[in-house]
Image (cartoon, rainbow, N blue to C red; front, side):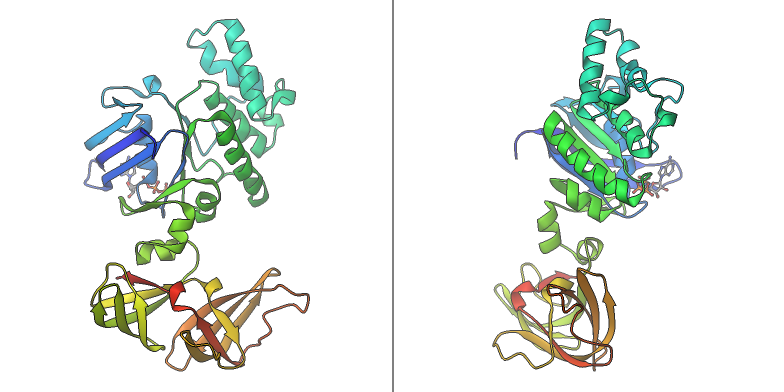
Length: 362
Ligand code: ATP
């Protein structure tokens, strides 16, 4: 990784009353990254973002931005700018005045203010609406005004707190792509807070998954999805089948275990050598068929279709085994015959490759 623009070292935040919102977190964020802080409500991600911006003070640890310790730097002197969930814009000012405001109040010469405002409006594709007032605009357009207001100050780091959560689903999808494009064009480091895993996976170059104030894993979207480090991350990112198993034996990287509903399995495991484990396997890795699969070295089990839900491009099938194991399977509907080709109550075989299973410690 290139040198960190934001370096968070052992940062904690304990609020009066004893709530530890952020607990000894360390993250290095590189220049030009689109970095996401992702986690369930209350995990501490907003508090961490607010500490980077200076709106909140850490009770432990150190935050460096651009190589400088920020402990004594107030929010308005930091090379950061924040875009809030509620896209704070002045309703009585035109779009242009909204965007130029931050430059005017800090005494930037009027020529430069005009030029930079025009550039910022261009970046968010709002030049043609410069004379409008925010209350004559859509939610997505207002959000872009808020982005332009932040970008015009040319921060090194743009902090975005759930920036899309006030938009409806369709607009949100469009704005995701806009934000990714914008980040690539302006070359500023973006740090976004979100509880929406799809949002983080589709936009971010790297993600820190947080739970209960602590970082659970920092990785690229595909690493998080394919190689989650814990049961929590596997369950939080996407859908997953988690099968309880007991380790019987372990030799080097291989374990032998007794898995609920599946019997004895030999799997590869990095890290776990004993005790109880979870075998994680994504629904799209599971295959379903009417006959017992013949190929060797497959994990396979017979069961009965309990549920079929049709989603157009995919169908979601739940198969229950006689030992009470429920397996979720995503079937790609790749022909116009339509559907998963199975129906409720039908006997089927489910199989997958051992290489698609991940052994996770409890
Ligand atoms: P959400 O997605 O719901 O905003 P979050 O992950 O951003 O959640 P935070 O807002 O950072 O979580 O809050 C983390 C914890 O700290 C929560 O338990 C919250 O109640 C607590 N907390 C946040 N701000 C304060 C405060 N000013 N005083 C006391 N406790 C606070």
